[in-house]
Length: 297
Image (cartoon, rainbow, N blue to C red; front, side):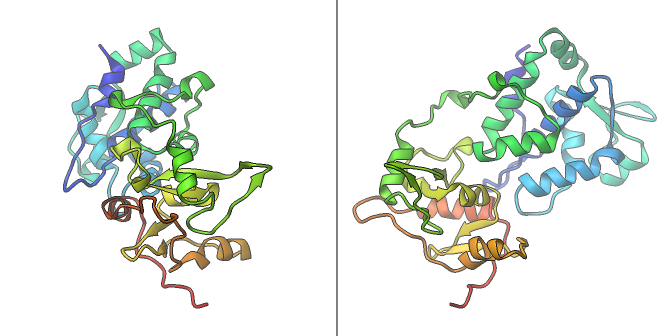
């Protein structure tokens, strides 16, 4: 049985292109807990808050419940659920899962495969990360899920046979004249730019193209906040800052809150601008709106 293929082809709810990482997040969490205690069952009532936090941090902006993947992941052959009445999930309702004492864990065949080949766990986790989340979030997502991956296990895979462009970073940094499109940061050591990255707007992991029209030159801080949904870009190509963001320090106000309503910088004339379709995808799928009002200057 090809467990990597199972991980790569989880059946997910889809509606109008809305991303639904519920099952991948639960499976990452389950792999992390297996790594800590291979024989432990995960009682729904005990892990519900952990799963809620994962969905709030790494899921879409709309509210969702961990009861959905806890029940439905069984259908993918990687997860099992038992209740006080025996094997089988009582349904996807929160009350049903709590009242029945539902507990889940990795499917028996998968647990056996992991015992035979411990490195399989890292490969499965890497597959889930590469297929559903941008690289800027991988390390902290592993920490949030309780996963410890060896260096060799964290090397990028090639989801669906696609290969990342090796030239995109240089093309994007050149288009934006080596400065962050949000704050203007343009640090260098000698002739080498430092702390500047090419940020996919429509995530590459979810089908976004490796094109300048789908990327922004961002400093490391604003790239991370952009991928987390703290920052976004509105229809007039001005920076959006989520109202949910809280920062009381002068640094947080100056580096994040003060960006609200600020126009994007660049790209230089003659190079492709950010595509409206990619901007819209990020605003709908990643940004944790509503946005703060523009800061008065």
